[in-house]
Image (cartoon, rainbow, N blue to C red):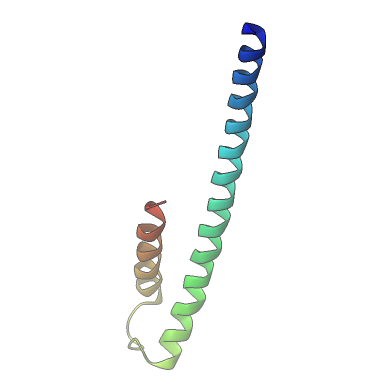
Length: 75
């Protein structure tokens, strides 16, 4: 019984490690894609006139990325 319990605990630890690695990878992919989308949205917003033409595009992207990072920190 002890061997079975020990084997089960080791197997669970391996599965948990793999699951956590997949979760972190998936989250990194999602955040990366959102950051790329933020850059696209910032360019579109600036072209449509929601931000002044004199406002720096990098600043707009940085604002959107800060909001994104704040949202994903909760998870």
